Amino acid sequence: MRTKTAIVFLTLLLTFAFSGLSHAQEKVLRMATTTSTDNTGLLDVLAPLFKKDTGIELQWVAVGTGKALELGKNCDVDVLLVHAPSAEKKYVKQGYGINRREIMYNDFVIIGPKQDPAGIKGLSVTQALVKLAEKKAPFVSRGDNSGTNKKEKKLWKAAGISNLDKESWYIQTGQGMLATINVAVEREGYTLTDRGTYIKYEANMKGNPSLVILVEGDKELLNQYSVLEVNPERCKKVKNDLAKTFSRWMASPRAQKAIGDFRLLGKQLFTPNAKTE
Image 1 (cartoon, rainbow, N blue to C red):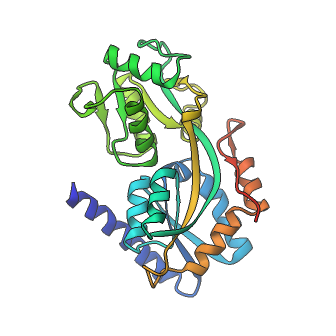
Image 2 (cartoon, rainbow, N blue to C red):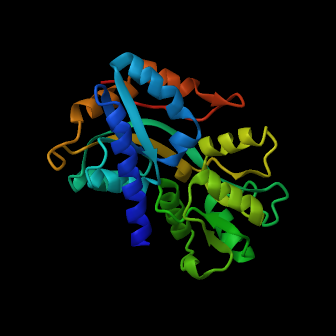
């Protein structure tokens, strides 16, 4: 596992290095972010606006939040856009990141087959997880220490269910959200996803997805996204001036409107909630 992680980080570093050569004369901000902001297409909308307003080119790698935080810890990126609040606050407290700024949110949902063989539709998230465990219904987890995976683990724990690694019905992909949803489709199983990525999956299926939302609305399912600057006191070569510019821009009325206006199938994927300075 350590070898695979090292290969991933090396690949990301090489990607940044080679792309940096072709943009030597430009201001380039390196960001590590979660797969949901990338897979949904949100960053493809925001990056050109950011460059137009600031002259800064945004380059990013999309990984699980755990790996994104690690890239910041290793001084491999300048800024983070992630969604695991408790891990982020610990990260700042440990001195790896500074100036955590909440930017937007959506929510997590549990999705599963339309026929819902485990019978969880409309239940609370705790009731649903207990029932899935009782029925031994296939549940597909990202298993990658991402923000979604961190939330999922907390929800299982709150439901009083442990030792999931030993259960044959609990399947860990070690992959991103869209890939994990596809595995859930193949296994006719259930999974936890952020709503934004689910809408992207729904759009990919032309509005007729195999998996549908069955559990939603609990306050525990809030999914907050935040920007963190990598601490320049630890990482002397990070471009903290560019990171600060990005953080402020993401909280600006222009960026907040773009986030709120971003839709697929006519549905809003993220809700802006940055506080004005």
